[in-house]
Length: 129
Image 1: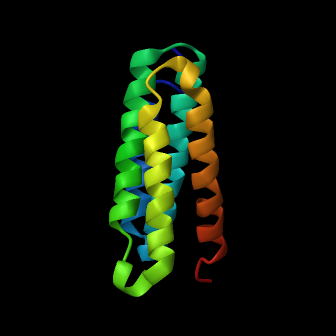
Image 2: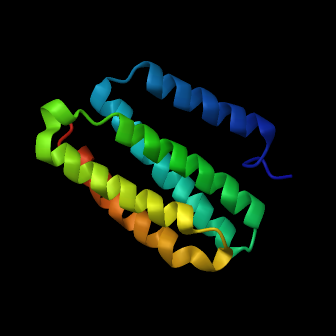
């Protein structure tokens, strides 16, 4: 067993994530969600490439949950048309992610990841200084 995949390293990752969330403001929390979402999509793609269907579906499910949390965080009253546009993008990305049920669906996962990575990058660009 490698150190990277050991149960202890997984615990350290959880502690690091929990610490990051505990000290985060609203903008940073969304950044954390984007980071986790992109990580889960990367894992889903890797599992698909390795034909690890069960792991692929598990990672895909986690990515979908995070994407749902991002959509639920939208404020349609304050965000107006921008919030509506983001909701449409999130729903399309979610549709692509959820349609990926087999290892040969990597193109759907990759296109969803690309869409979401662009939004994540824009979100980081407007971070308060």
